[in-house]
Figure 1 (cartoon, rainbow, N blue to C red):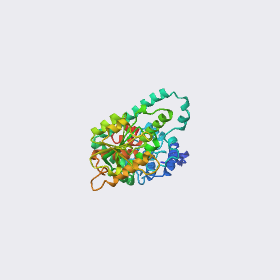
Figure 2 (figure 1 turned 30 degrees about the vertical axis):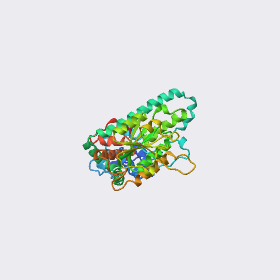
Figure 3 (figure 1 turned 90 degrees about the vertical axis):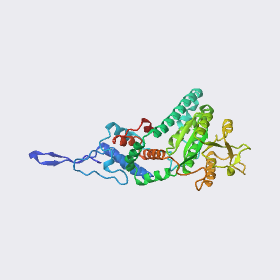
Figure 4 (figure 1 turned 135 degrees about the horizontal axis):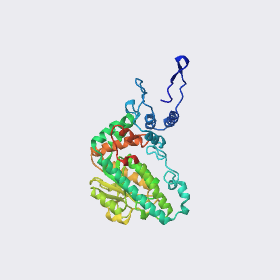
Length: 402
């Protein structure tokens, strides 16, 4: 399909005259895109590139065998001519998923507070002309909108019919390849919901991003974040809070919730059956090595990088613990503290005991996360809904924002 097929026309006397094949503009652009994607680092991106090509492939002529793709989708599962011109155009214009915030292969910044992946340099340079009060009000509205979006997305997954989830998974599976599907499935089967994390008003999005990746590595599925807009004072603090939304929005493999206040977060988490274990330097805190992690579902709280947890959190926590230090430094970096805590939890989790118990997600949640993983592994966001639509499955609009 990389060119217009050679055609024949009738010349003088009725004889057939062959006409030279020429590449179509769509095919030329597509070939360039596929070649660029083929140089991507991940096998998933390379195989998905071939799948994306199906969006532009014309319907085969009767009796002509369609080209088959290797390690991706067969012709029977391609978009064929089902995608409308508008849908094809939308896919073509959409940037390839992934970008600089690569969950699986991420390089940490030398200047985390000014990491361009979270903070736009142009915005930083323009802050001198911004009215802070007005900007803070706008930011508070955007924080609320992001919080509601995450709530809607979580609810949309829970509300999906199990049969729809199963059908959608079967449809999308060929488009990511067997290796990618098996990796998604094996990772999700090791997830645990017995432990969750809560970050209370953190200030550095690069730190939060590192924490989320560490949490993912230990198999914890659920993470909450308190973003109390009124706690972020000054233009730099507000700008970094903006980066927090970028960090959370890019953590596709975790189930995230954004809470407006400490009180609301603790009340909701305790209602879910979790005990609150907060990291705190106060002299009454337990040594992390002595903490009993086997008392039931636990939510681990990490505070602000400079202030720690709030007085409100300290009063509402069931247990506070500390990470012992013998050097001159007063505290660990947030991501380091998260890693150390998880290491202690992991060391005490074995033989069905402890805070980390792999494989305890309920079947419907596991199936929904598997579908979410397949949608997130396609090269472009709009591709999944279009593939499902042609098979009669229309996902809620919120899924287009994945």
